[in-house]
Length: 147
Image 1 (cartoon, rainbow, N blue to C red):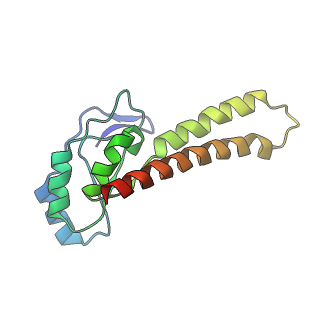
Image 2: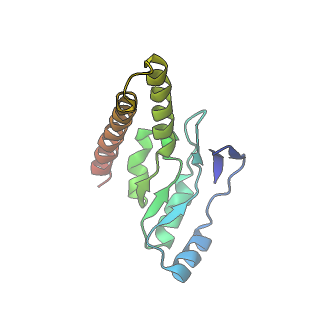
């Protein structure tokens, strides 16, 4: 899978081969399978270029929930198609990490030294909570449309 995480970058990503996914599933009986079909880890410079044909073939080849890494850069418009094609878990860690750090920089820079650390960190948690609520709202709405 392509992208950047923890300072490690992978420029090119190979898509998961549906036949290899089926073989892997058959041999391991995993409970969920993370697949690569165009998303990337880390910050996106543009909308993710997802290959829904590859995803659909993987979905038909395995009988297990599919996981999407790199969900931060996925358009809400694409969520319904992802759900229809077996995506059951969408990882959105990058946006949560970035949001927390941005808010932390702001609150730490504005805080006096005698301020409680709790007063500096709670706004970071609250900002992440807002993002999570937004994601849940959009994922649930698109799930309803997909079903």
